[in-house]
Picture (cartoon, each protein chain N blue to C red):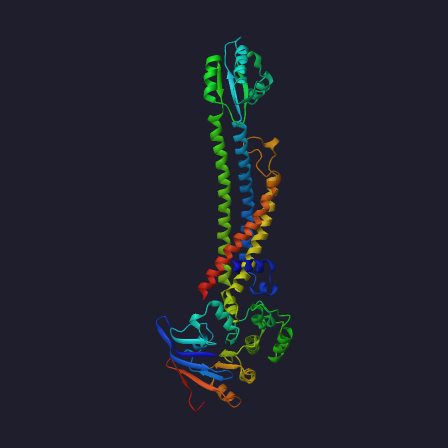
Length: 225
Length: 301
């Protein structure tokens, strides 16, 4: 599904990641941890084709990203839902329109998908806020809206970059429950977070692999996690 | 080619959902509308100038090429005899369709702009003028001059060549100037819209980032901008074209204005030409925005 083989990534002459090998199997659950600036976001970007490795191979759905045209990358993104820490919404569109954005850009009629959209909005608990504009949402509401947008195309993989970075513990748990539920539906999940308590709490509900980036390399986390 | 046609089809059909994806951008919208409108207004005048000078060149070329003047300057008492002799010569000259001596009223009318209507033409030693109209084949001017020199010593043939050529050349240059102006106006529209489109694309870099994150292809993103700018240019140019046509209509008429600029404007079916201006402005905007969007999206990747 997503396969990194001996991947390195350098920027401005500095190597940010080195010799990374990672295979995301269908239905697997991964946590990616490490200190701030370790390269978690860079690794996630390599996983959804936003960056191209400077060495090694990154394969998305069996194809090397170097062979991808920009349109190929766009098509791959429809199979990979991404949740950013800062959510990245279009502030002039309502929450509902933002959630439906992947449908809109793929040329699907949102009216045909309205039942699906309503169900999804309800699933993340934003039915009452569907008409609001993104700046009117709280941090937790924004993260849930971003998660709904990431899964509306029913992607194979969901990548989340610090999804609980701006929310309280209770909201973190709520978001995590949604992600675990997605995993139970068969989605592959990878969450980048530096919140070890969150990982420990989640591991009581899901069988997850915890990876740590340390000194530019990826390794399995210790038994304490 | 098929991609281009698809783009045009998508542009015409529109997509209400896609149109809302890019936020309306205030100053670039006004810049596009205003520049397209102003340039369309100017384009109407450039077009009117081109068409009017084209007509002028044709008219001058045709009218002057088909007529000549014979001037009889002779001592008092010989003018009539020499005029008859000249008419005889002209009547037997191949290529001359007709020839007639202007009467006193016609000669007075010719001098009226300079001397007024009450000129006592009969008392003045004014040469007699003969108007010569050529056939389509024309006559041999050199041969005619030789015959006239032998048979009518006081006759001077003026076939208008001397001053016809610079006039026709001037009219042709004016026509060329009009077309060059239209090309420059088109280029200016393209430059202004490219600047506006670049500004809008830069201002919406974050929007483009989000669209790419959720799987939008470059064609989709580009079309959202292209459609907007094309429709704005079409609308602005339509308003400018209507204003330009009204201004041309309000120009002094032939009878009132007279002189060199007589007939500046559109005549008959030429009034349809200005309708092309908004369509051309839209085409220029479409191509300029498409190129700007593709370049920007390529640089953003």
